[in-house]
Image 1 (tube, rainbow, N blue to C red):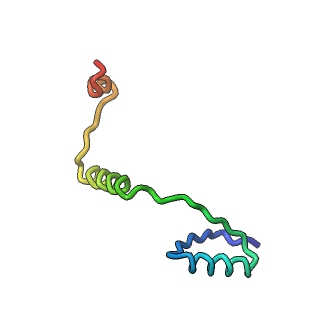
Image 2: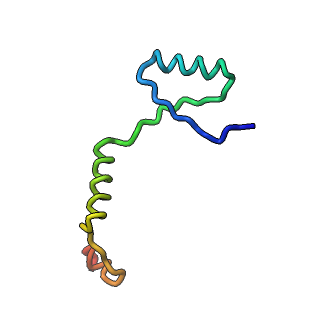
Image 3: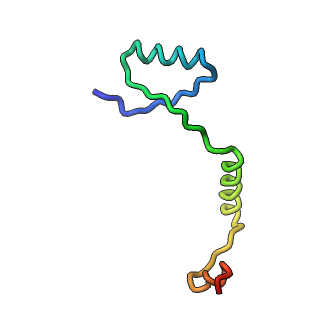
Length: 74
């Protein structure tokens, strides 16, 4: 029977990473290591600000008929 959960652990140093690998190997569990980096913090900050502005009603709506004009194409 397989567990349905996926656990993501963020070791803070090489010692912790090695201990985790050894532990998982000892339990004969499959694991993978990824070098993916988290999103750029400035990008995340902009997205959060945008969501907040939307929730506060600070946004502009454009009708389909006015889209070209809004984009300066007409």
